Image (cartoon, rainbow, N blue to C red; front, top):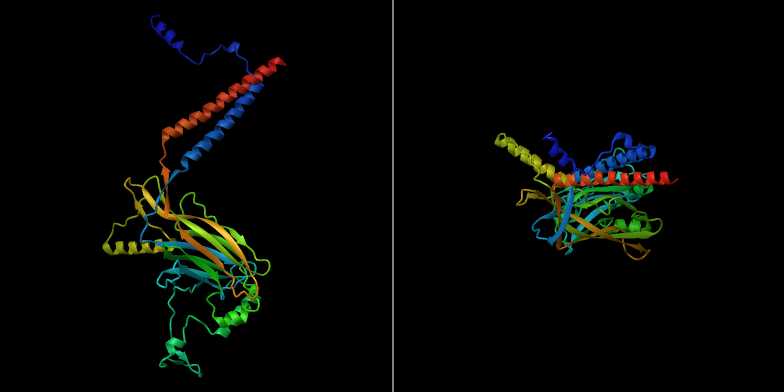
Length: 388
């Protein structure tokens, strides 16, 4: 009995008194409300868990201090009625200089009239204004190459085919309603500039023969499957991805004006970089393979900050669009232009580290709130039944 005294006093502190079984009543309405509460609580629990596992982020703005780095542009654009033999991609920087020394990896895939890749035609590497023309000898009348001609290097450039042959090839491709998929990446300086896709690199004779009388033959209908600047990070949205524009009549020039915002994405923790602990030769081979992989995948510079967290240096952008319609005789060659400029302000996105205490608090709040509400609903339903 001595022990019963303190226990009896302790029971008085209980916030959950229990009635005897013969004093309680179980109803069908209460069972329905209870089942609904359990289902809602489970759904909210799963949703809260998924949200907690997904990286939460906070953003802040700083002055962009990036220097001496290239800007990698990833493109994947399909032109539905311009053949690859006529199409080219050219890039200029803000001063209008052709940067012939930059690395470019752009390919062209011929498409049929339905937009599918033509069987038997493999993608070709695009010749752009960055590539240095390969010069050869002068062809004589008998079809032989004369390398001794003093003016050979000035009169013959292998980058250009015979103009009449180009005209015939383009005419055939236009008759078959061929298209062209232009894809790959190009590295440019981190200054404003533009790149455009059209028939600008064709010589004057070709343009006169094919398009002078009817510029509507340069149909710039296109689909932008993907256009991005730098590597992707979780949650990034490229506003031009999936954009499709159709020219139903006449000729049109499309201009996309993009504002590039440098972005630093800070992961929750450092991402381990694979290391090869073998011989020096094997390590060198592995390092070379890693460099090649990064070159192909377009890896942007990454580094670890003072807190040991891995930071990805990349970009995001906003865009506005302008379309101009070209009339015959304007002397304007229709094209698709992408004009870009860099913002002086950089955005830093921080992944918020997962905190179990916050997660547990939110789960308890959600589940407890559901059962509190279901109890009130059950009480209101019981009173409504008693009053009838």
